Length: 583
Image 1 (spheres, rainbow, N blue to C red):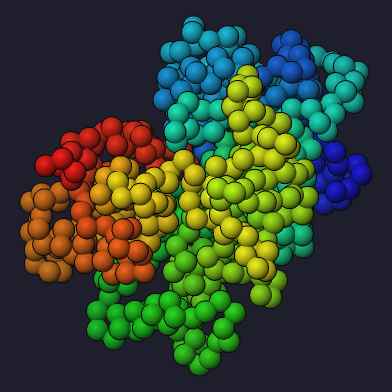
Image 2 (image 1 turned 30 degrees about the vertical axis):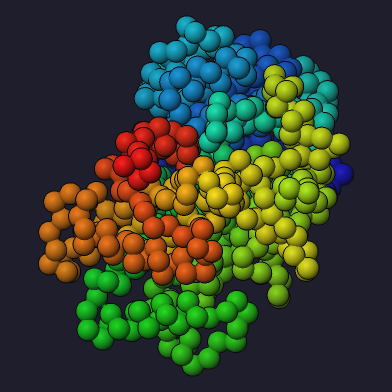
């Protein structure tokens, strides 16, 4: 890490000195991309810091920020907050009012910034129950306390001397953010991360990721409240990349093709959805075109990582794979996948198609990264999450839990000494994940410690591993393995409605009730049997029930990062659980 780069807010000045450019941040407005230069970025950071000082923000104050889509204002505010010694508390836009109330109170947030009217109204409704003095909006049409007002305030007052003193007083070890976990098993915990922890991870990415050029186009589209996206945007700024903000998930493919990003961080659920859409287009073909498409898919599925490409691959590339790459703009060099396990099949298929996927592993508590498969020759080992990143020590506990110690590990959980002491022992953070270190040093994740369970016969079940195998079935959108304390595991399934509809049409089959249709259910069981062939008999799923609706973030089935809320799902479908085991 460069000596003059010790706090997160040093990054803009570092870019200004080493890679200044006119397209540091780019926003689609009125059909055109409007750019903010590095110089203007730095100037607006100081202006907003000055406004916050005028409003009485003190070092250590907490400022909550929630935005529906990523935007340049978030980044300006982030740096402005950090350089006066205050603390950024990012929130997901999909949280409930109850969650907002809890986090705003628990974090002691003084101000809250929102991006639109809906979020303003959501926070406004619970504001009387919190310590939030003012809600500010990035959208100038929402309220008087808006971004334009703050910029004007900062330009009309002078706190330059105090600003410089505040910046000088911030230590690399000072708290930069409290990032609340999405809470798969209970109330969210506030992860305390210091400047040096996030900065170490962001700058180390330069050696982990094979992108040495500056000024490359990048698309920011994953929620900025998630440490994964936040980390890569710090990395982009450090490297001097051009950051473009996606308009929405609905416009994502259009934005891919406009921006032509060279690298994409991605989460498995999104990649699965993209793959499903590619397969749906293949299924819609007919005759020779359809045969060629699925020949190319089978070829990709049977191509090992690092395998030499031959004539068949060249033909498949010209006719099929090049079209897949065009979906992402045509210039994409690779993906990095994190946040949840990724199907091995997808890694092989996309890599064979010229879209390599480097699967990694990280947590909010590790500032986003613990390990990563490498772009270097022989650096990808499918079935693992790669080698441990520099600056970390990893060991496996006697019960199989992964323990981590090093430069980017959390300070602790905010106002929760009990959870902090449970998680950090002898300097090692207990991840809650079960895994092993392979002979070549690669890390393999097998399951979540708290999610593993025993059947009544005493056999351990690793649900996430089984779920990932079953999601290879095009019929299955989401699946949760259940059965703790019972004779055998079973599953609750949300089907892929689009695929099932297409399948029914092609087979001239009318489905009146998707949860009970015997033909459809038999087809799912057939897929489950095929994909579960490698499992032990005690792990195989012989009974399942289909839920009557989709599993969504809004309905509480999923966390904002698309992980299963197992307790919630089990409670919602207790009748199906009873049907499987007690009837």
